[in-house]
Picture 1 (cartoon, rainbow, N blue to C red):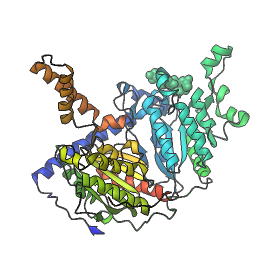
Picture 2: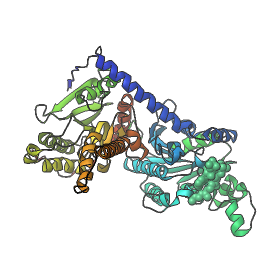
Picture 3: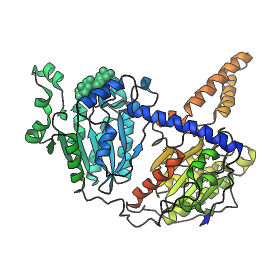
Picture 4: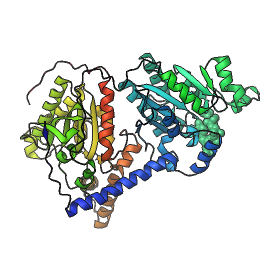
Length: 540
Ligand code: COA
């Protein structure tokens, strides 16, 4: 593999302008993350009350369980961002991957300081997505339960459908049957539907004095049966550990619970992070030869001005060493082999609009990676496939379809990062959410929509004017229509709009991307290799 050269001039004015602009995006993202951690109306009081009850915050709980000095890959931190008057910072739950005795686990931890840990639509979507990631990546799940269950005012949007509450329980039962341990620690009231998270777990720990499980809480019992009973007598740790058997262990404090949980996890016979299954070629890792922070100066502050994806690739991969495939053909897509944290990976990155040759080159490269069982990394930054007569004559519809079909049918693990624009069918061909990448991360400078706001303004205005069928339109009306369309597209293509709706697994900084991908690759390396079918490579 050859070390990629760089053309970045760190002394240029444009570099300094770009860095300054990206620092603002960085600060905005950090502020948003902080809001998810402890922000929101009245949250101060909830947090104070939570601590007064002797409870830890969700992230402190996770910290107490994972191995010392190991990183936690938090997912979808900004789920629910800007929804329901921002009443659900972080979606009311914390999910992510952490390591316990060397083994990776999925964590799903309720945040009781957000509406009692109850789940509104983006919260349940986040929980179900975490379970899907766990299943696909062969991870046991640890549930740190402190939740009021379904958010009742929006029950029609969280309760009945396939991927709502029932879907979460379905996944829990299926994962257990697939040999992926389901462990619960009960740290708050688990009422009604909430009771099934621990009840469906393989092993359950309850913390005396704070953990409670009941199908109907004291108010319901009073209304239904006239019984007046306190919470612990109805469903406390002692009752469930010594009488009902719903819980397997009772402890006095949260800290004791986490020490016991770590002991229990040690008996689950799961493969550790340092025990790869052996199918993925892995070498000694080396850092990139260029400083990753330089990406801030490479990405243009004006999203319409392109940047060379080689410069991005060089700052993410080991030693900046890249073995490029077909470098002299179809150059608006760059394909090649590299290593990330030692793991071999096939990189496919956009350098602008996707032309006929580029689509064919990408399809060919996907076949090669499939034949060789090499995972694929897609770095998206495209306005989509090329339009126009020349492109149509060249068969862009079928060539794009070949690429889309190759992506859809690739059985090697796929990962996607939105490094810039993700527009139109470019999103599909470059393994957008619909094409089931194992993980999809988004950079704060990225944009995602059917088309860019500039294009939408023209296309949709023409459609609306056409719909008026010759009726007079004043310049003023046209300007208003244009402004409305632009505003809609600008709002909806924001990466915050996307991450809020779980179109990705998290908004991350370019500087954290290599580590996040390294962890994801380590997860797939410890699983059995992909079952690729016929290893046919059709030359395109
Ligand atoms: N739906 C909607 N809001 C809920 C909720 C739910 N399932 N569970 C809790 N909340 C809200 C409360 O209304 C309160 O909101 P506010 O801060 O705006 O006033 C906030 O969460 C905190 O609840 P509170 O009861 O004050 O906290 P607590 O720590 O004393 O008790 C629970 C927490 C979860 C034990 C308790 O709220 C509860 O039992 N909730 C109802 C659970 C239920 O019946 N769920 C049905 C699931 S199908």
